[in-house]
Image (cartoon, rainbow, N blue to C red; front, side):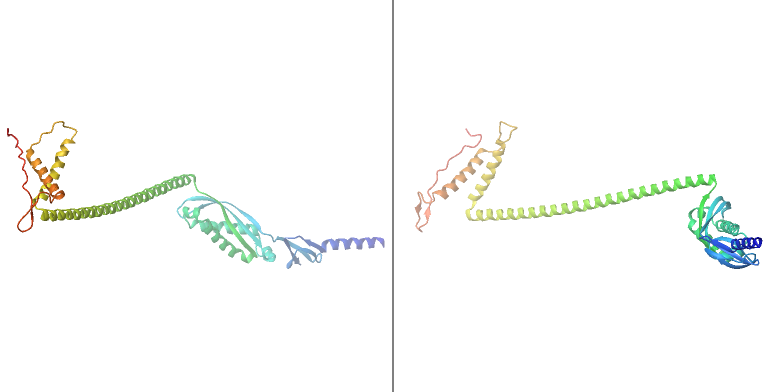
Length: 329
C-alpha cells in the first residue's frame, strides 16, 4: 500500500513538473498540442497538459540586432567596394516567426544581403558614398515588406562601412584636394574682385567730391571776380564823376598818385642801391605841383580873391616856378 502511495506521489510530481511552465519577460513560448500550434504563451505562469502539449519554440520578442557580414559589391560604374551593414528587427507575431519561416535569422540575413547588392549595384561609386541615407531607406522598405509575412518588423537598416579600393581612395583624395584648391582660388578671386570694386567706388566718390569741390571753388571764384569787377566799376564811376566835376586837376592828381607809388617801389628794391630814372624829373615835379594847387584851393579858397563885375571871385595870379629841364645849365 505504501508503495502505491509513493508511486502516486512521484507521478504527481512528474505531472506538475511537466505541466507547469514559467515564461520569462521578453519571450513568448509557442505551445503545440499533439504536434500542432495551439497558442502563444505570454510571460508568466502557464499550465499545460503533459504528454499532450509541449513547448515548441521560445521566441525572443525584444528588438534584436543582426550583423550582416562584409560583402563585395560591384557598383554601376564597375567599382568593387566592400560593405558592412546591421539590421534591427523585432518579432511581433511569435506564431508566424516560429512556423512561417524555418530559420528566421538566416532568412533575414540572406534577404538583406541580396537587396543590398541590388540597391548598391544600381548606383555609381559616388552615389554609394554620398547617399547612405537613401540606401538605408530603400533597404528598410524592401526588407520590411518581405519579412512582414513572418511576423517580423524591420525597424532600421544601417550601412556601417563602405570600403572603396585603395587606388580609388587615393584618386578621391587627390580630387578632394584639387576641389578644395579650386574653391580657395575662387574665393580669393572673388575677394580681389570685391576689393577692386570697392576701391573703384571709392575712387569714383573721391572724383565726384573733387569735381564738386572744383565746381564750388570755381563758382566762388567767379562770384569774387564779379564782385571785384562791380567794385572796380563803382570805383571807375566815382573817378569819372570826380573828373567830370573837377576837370584836369583830378586827372593830374590820380596820375601823380600812381606815378609816386611806382617810383617808391624802386626805392624798396633790395637788389639795387643806385636808382636811374629814365624819365624827366620835371614831370614828377609838375604832377606834385598840380597836387599842391588842388590842396591850396581846397584849404584857402578865399584868400587874395578879387570880385569881378558880376560878383564872382577871381583868383590871384599864381607865381609859376620854372623848373629847369634835364640837360639845361
